[in-house]
Length: 227
Image (cartoon, rainbow, N blue to C red; front, side, top):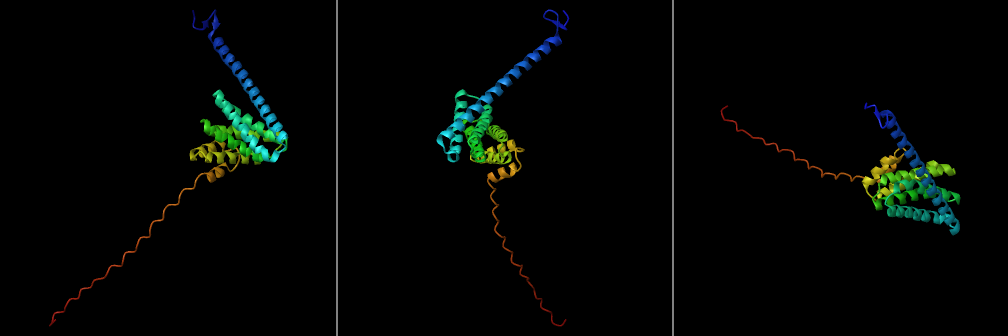
């Protein structure tokens, strides 16, 4: 049997091409499923946040508290399942901002607190801090655009929150978060630089004492008489 034919005379290229199509269709189906899951998380978080804030009647004071609690709940969910933190972070952050916006809350302040909570939570469970920071920042920026908030100010607040949280973890975390967020907003390097501890100034060396001028020694020669 010729190498060009397999399984009842099918061409090898046809078999290979069909394998590629099968994988393509499967990946598309999975990605659609992921998009649906993310949309469901956004809706769940948005409704939960907005309904809770309406129930408390204290939008200004409770927005930050509720956002922290929601982020904590999402992280606990990922711990119990054993995965999903990276996937869910963006959707949770987006849902929080949209929920706060629905009731007229301060989305800029909440954006920073949301990202800060996500970064700290990621560190506690051993997740990739920089990647979680990027997903959270992307989520709050995307939400701010959809609700008509000032996306630039939201982005700055989010990046500040990420860098501040990373600063409590260590210098390596600050650098990795900074590198991941470069390009999100201008001035990320400056923000991260401010979070890094300043190098200690080099100890000033004690001034070197001036050597005393050498004493000039003169020798007198006695003149011989009669010369």
